[in-house]
Image 1 (cartoon, rainbow, N blue to C red):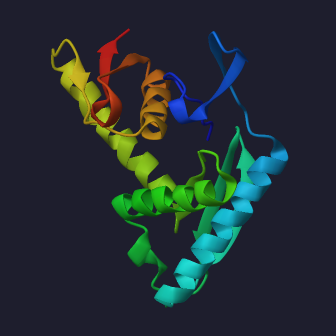
Image 2: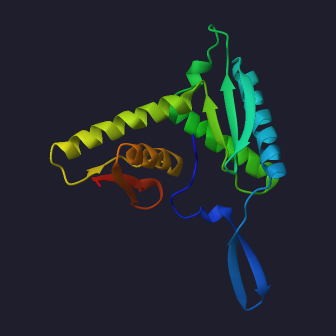
Image 3: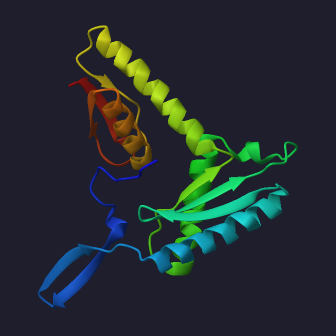
Length: 185
């Protein structure tokens, strides 16, 4: 799965560079491999502590790709209650808490991705079904089909699915209200 931002960079990804006291320019700051490894380690420690407190079993894997740290929590134990944390809203909230924990220790914004018990794959499948229903509306004569607001990561996944289906998508709105609109090509 490729993760490429289609919108403007997050302001937290920007670093101010003062050339002199009269002018300020802004440039993006990409994390190094060492930065991403550190983010992953901090995030894994945070998640591990959370799992210990909640008495939930899970194995944590750390990966870095596409300029992000990826943290996956899985278990082979069918009696584990890890699935309690796999709800999309719960994963999103835990991801934000984990990002804050990383930011607290590094002083920098984190774009890490958290997956719990395959929640990312499940959400991607759900988004594909949502796109398919929107395309059905287009096939029935609608000029465009709007999807509900979602995160930039989820909008990127939607853009990929829409493109694979041979349709066109754009994002509209601002902040938390940003949503995707699908049209025929």
